[in-house]
Image (tube, rainbow, N blue to C red; front, top):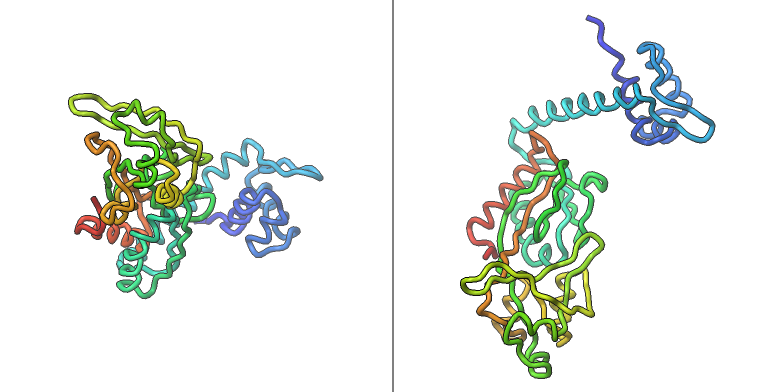
Length: 303
């Protein structure tokens, strides 16, 4: 049985992904000339043109796009085959790249990471602390921890690992100056500290006794893309905040913050683990997911 020249196919995939023979060749460890010759040999063998070439641009032909799509499937199958073999040992190893919300990562995820590293000494963990919703695939992360509803993305799998009560709260100084809201309609006359980023804006939803869910009308002059910054602003007396309980439970206990409209039921805040769609996960990712779920199942700061 004659096998295809996989090296030529890999060079083609590299050039297509990088968008040029120079960058594609470099990624494959070849010169531009060597990469070009490898692709030409592949085109001659297939009897089709895979790239449209001009002096200024390089683009895939229809045949090239089809071949690239099949190539992606082949590479995914190879990666899956490798994962199926390495997973048999059950021993995590290598670099785990995770992105987490800033405050939640520091308060809740870091202790879990410590116990995970203690259990698996062959794993290294790299963590990005940001409230920005990163593109896992584009930026090369294995896993994201996200607060709130995860955006629908067919490339990703979402797994809820914890839930928290949402809390409406403000500082005693703010409430003394502006008064306590007596109902949802009063919130419009107060300063709301609203989470807002380029990709999403927070809504405040409540359910009163024997009523359905309603969204409060908020007048927010200060909008922030960090839960920790919203907490700090609330402590400074700048307005009313709507935050998950893990972030303010100590402040409420020590009365630095007071609950507002406690008779209303607020939405539950979900925390999800998000990861790229794969039928088989690398052991370091799979074990970290299991470790997260185990920690929360045994009451690790989960509501």
